[in-house]
Amino acid sequence: MSTAENLPALEVRRLSGSLGAEVRGLSLSKAVPEDADRLRELLAEHLVLFFPEQNLTPDEHIAFGRLFGTLESHPNLSTDAERPEFFELHATGGAGAIADEWHSDLTCQTQPSVMAILQMRKCPEVGGDTMWTNQYKAYEELSPPMKAFCEGLSALHDAHAHDKPETMAIHPVVRVHPVTGKRSLFVNEHFTRRIVELSHDESEALLGFLTRWAGNPRFAVRYRWTEGTVAMWDNRCTQHCVLNDFEGERVIQRVTVMGDEPRAAAELPWEPYVKSLSAASRHDRQLKRFLDGRAG
Image (tube, rainbow, N blue to C red):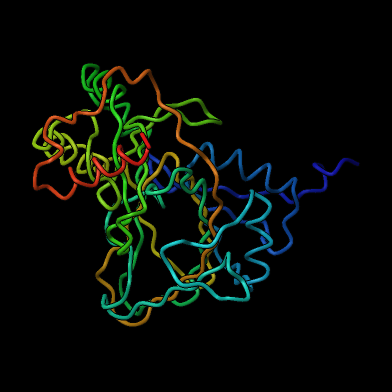
């Protein structure tokens, strides 16, 4: 009997019309590479997967994450020195550090996060749900002229929200997924600062529209956590946001799979708009520094 025939049957339940599925029938602590292959296929279909009642230890969590690639420490958060690729984040009553803006993880880096695997260690008494949006749909539901325009643009991303504004990268506004070949919108309100090829005012207008559009509820799934649930999602075609409405303590544990450089959906025909980069705008000055450094 082949290894595939020995794998447990999975129960998969869709959670919304746009993305998300809950998966039962697999103990992640005992997952093998063949299980990871099946989960990659499910992830390509549903974009975010949830596994209730897992209760992984930190070492089991790390071992599961390594089935999907190289794990790296989160550059903007403190980590356990014994397990630099693993971090635990506490928040209480909306007062702690919490990702309450729409974002895809670490787009401020040249090679942003491919995938995140998160476990809810402790749920708040009330609230604290997480939402994800499908960025394939965000791109697909733009008008044809807007699609064509955005495909020719790139954007500056930085880690200013984490007090590290010097960490910057430029990525295409529309990227192609390296596995599915599908196009997705790739700007977000947390990390994206400036459309490179536009003037400051033009950038503000377009980026404001795109970041609002990316969080459209029609593209979303909202998940109510239970303790011990593990979620994994594809950062290349989703965004997520925590609802900062909770009471009590919220504790998460996470590992991050890194190492994917976004590929543009089309040729970028325009040069950076440098006419006004000496202006007072912080984002303009950042873009100038980045371009000067790249030229050097």
